[in-house]
Picture 1 (cartoon, one colour):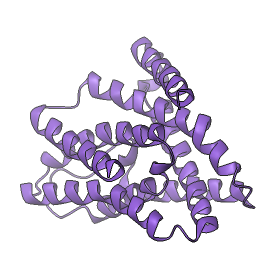
Picture 2: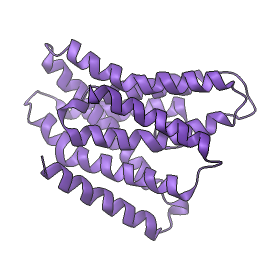
Picture 3: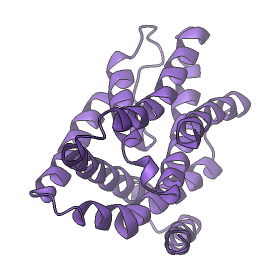
Length: 226
């Protein structure tokens, strides 16, 4: 049940925080940087070894496929998965491309999250700042409040749905391993993009550097604690 509730609560909490704050501040950007470092570290320390230990053939191809899929999703969403939003605030039509791409991304995230508590935590930590940024942006558009809320709720439900689907199809374990490999590629692309784009004009930022190091160290010790 925790694998269903926590990802959804992370998105809802992000929406509520977006209602409470006036604009995206440095604290949210630091949380985003931490989430990227933590997600990347858990992927490298735990998720990649787990997927390759399955001895299923052609895992690397599916990891690269995940990176390509995420590139396509980011083309549709404008990079919202890692904190970017490029939807025109003056337009009132529903951002279907953004919505569909985020839902597909979140659905994929749900498939492997019950493999370890640290992977679940990495996904939850990743979703919260993204939900804050997306919700904050959508609330400033011409969309009706109920449309924004519906967007957030459905977006929040997609990861639990992905988790449930993984159990429905668990008898096809070999195929689920390929899905896990795709998610590895998605996580690698998302997390590294967050880290590489966290510095404005590629200048060194001491606070973000420290946060990134903390994220890596925390992931290492939490992962080795299980």
